[in-house]
Image (cartoon, rainbow, N blue to C red; front, top):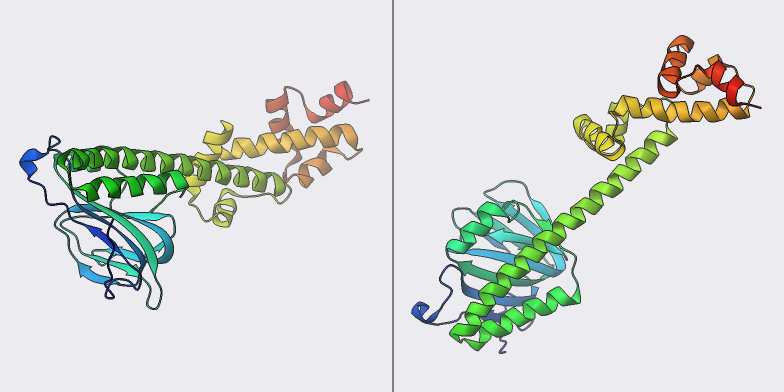
Length: 286
């Protein structure tokens, strides 16, 4: 596969592939690879760029930024990927004096619109992927198919691109699920640690840089209880432990757990356990 130098793009040899095949010889008409390339050490930053075809850009090294239609400037780093497409204006590339390593694949056809409309993620956002040797080799394999210039291999490259994208998106969904799981665990641990203060939903949300509604949803999804009920149940579990292992009064235990009203604490405890704090201590205690 040939490489060449273009110092306006990079100080390293680059590969830019533009197959010239009669479209009539392609059997897959709904998705056609228009061009592709590998730009290691890219230094060029493009401003107000527009594109005739849809493309995916994947970054394997370095960092920079990406912006669509003059909107939010988004950070790009190794493991980022984003889209370029008709009808929008893009500012993207490495920061001044820096570089990034880039693969890109440009395609056209009705199949692309199907991908965009049904399963590709938000086209205006930078996404993340877990780089691994298998995915890197798959990109290299697609470049080799495109470089061959034969109609059959261009058809294969289009099918490979669709499969690659689908796995990329599926992997992102799985990574997102993992991030949500870790966030939920941190929130639950935080609530448990702050039981004696007591925590409020606003304070916990602020500590984790999320909205109150998001916090309530995470707690409910993770525990099966609304936020306030989950806190009551955590406090009740702690109260049961204290009742059995100390001589503290019910009033002292309630105050320690953030209940200013002893009678309210007793009602909550009985609703959850079926007995009052005093009954619990007398029945189960030594």
